Amino acid sequence: MITKRNFNIEDSQYEWLRKKAFDERTNQSAVLRGILDRAMAAENKEATAVTIANLIQAAEAGRTLRQVLEAAYDKPAEEIGVELADINDYERDLGERIIRIYAVFDGSGKPTGDVALVAGQTIWQDCGTANIVTSIDEEAEEAFMQTWVRVYPDMDAVFVHNNAYDTILVTNAAKPTLSVEPGLFREFVDDPGDWRDWNSPDNWAEHGDTIGEAAPKYGEIVAFYDGRELTVVDPDRWAERRLYYGADRIDIDEYATTYEDASGNAFEAFQIPWTEVTRILGERHTGDWEQDQALIRALRAAGAPDWIEEFEGGWCDEYGWGVFGPAIEQADEK
Image 1: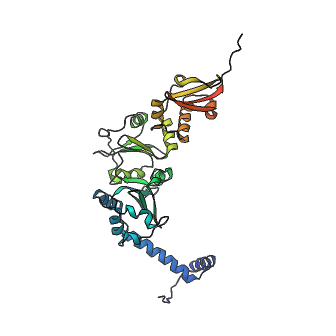
Image 2 (image 1 turned 135 degrees about the vertical axis):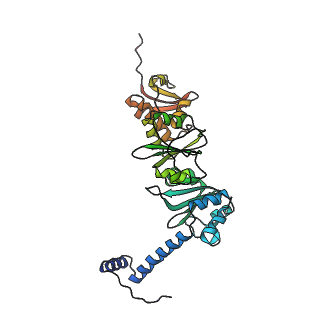
Image 3 (image 1 turned 45 degrees about the horizontal axis):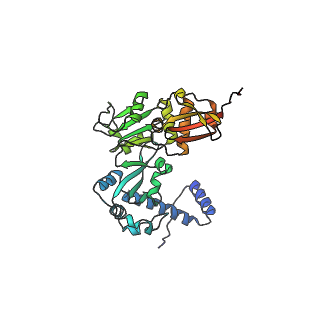
């Protein structure tokens, strides 16, 4: 039912309303109703949305995706609207327990209210204007990792960067935050796993209940550990910080070699042993272009000649990863 009412608005508001109606090819009343509908929907969503703390409690209690969604929206899960997916795409996972939770934080480190729940093979994204359901495969994508910050289960240690300094946050009884210097960075890279002895006068507890909540308040999450497994969120920034702290310094003369093709032609080359490749990358080499570029940058920083950036080709064998460049001129035989 539509009821006519009179409201007083300023001249500038009326002009905006008139132009908006003209641009949308509708009437001013329809524009006003649309504005009110969106405001009421946002207010209702805010009232029913679950907080990060409540979501974590639900996950720790073993609640399913269905239980959490129906408690938040106060309706059967099948009646909750979603984009990019049909109910048949994810209803098989409604009975699965929530295994991971992500959130989005603004520039000041405050949660925006957007959360993503992982259950079974489904990621349910509760965003400001829509609910989006996607496959768990998206969780491994770089775009997802740069947008969403995992808040459950806790990460063990997080490397954070901002324009002024770098910080490492660690999950242990002291919840320490440590200012990064070259020695500490090398420990973070080379000796992960047991974080019990990492300590500092400063701690992150005042910035969040979990390390995932606290970390964005110190800057951009670049990399984090689950136990001994390192996940690099921003490969370019990680490579930059490794070079900055000297973690990728290598003895260029030690790795200088020659490469010989099937015709017996010899080329200038460098080969890095696999143990050093893993140390430089922070992970095993899988053949990704970005990994190769990180190794090229490490060689260049160590003093490799200019050709390293426009090398002729590369190879891998049981000894390591290699690149070759200009041909070596053979001395004339007499």
